[in-house]
Image (tube, rainbow, N blue to C red):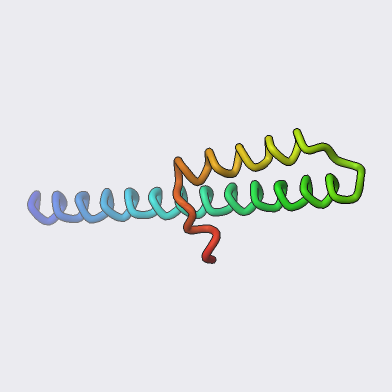
Length: 77
């Protein structure tokens, strides 16, 4: 009986770990998409005279930092 419970516990732990990894992946993709949207908004504002090159540069740096940490998979989705 103990062997069965040990295996069930291992499977449950694996499931939790996989679920957490998937959640982290989805959150990173969502954050990347938000940063990309912010970059687009900053660029649009700059081109229309209501934004600044500094704001566009900050948005670009934030996006590049995210890509360095989490990869660019969200760009393909």
